[in-house]
Image (cartoon, rainbow, N blue to C red):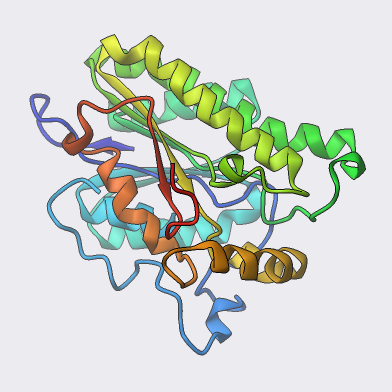
Length: 294
């Protein structure tokens, strides 16, 4: 994501990654989606977020566009229709959207993604590492997780953010400015059972964030983590095993007794790329309605 304001002003922009890697699901609110049939429609930001003049997933991409950011979206080829719909919303908000389908576990692709962004916009101010394998997973004891599934989760959830950060930091150093936000989860704090590969991967993101923050702080680059709770996404709604076994206990554990929606992450993500956190790096912000308190 890039910001088109003068060099002397810190940019306020941000972009998301697709919710999941390798899943061909209708986007929430789109034709054929589960949320389209819900009695109470979840808010994904299309109507509710109007911009505040600060810098602030489809909700996040749209919010950033309305704050003046150009947005780069990367996704799998199966998600082309969804990506195009998101791009139209960004453009309707008066900003540019660059669509780059590909595999974030590929070193070559991550470098090409960064190169294309710089070619198109001239600079990169913000990276949000949000691609992850989650909603397609089935709950199972750790000894039943096969090695191929373990490796896939680790490749997308850990290798991907590492490769993207490694590719983007040299360009951020050039301008002595950057914001990297890695998306983790509340599960490492709880040790959520029957999702060992996912929980382990998201614990690794906490460590990755802290270590990179130490290395790049002197270059004007801030690296922080957002750790959401169980978000009522399209993938979670369609995964009966996950929905039936996790939604109730998670809701019961929250101080705020309601489902977590995608728009609950917009303003925290806005904060993590704004000047309001200019003296904050290597930290984790948990947004889960008070289930994890740390």
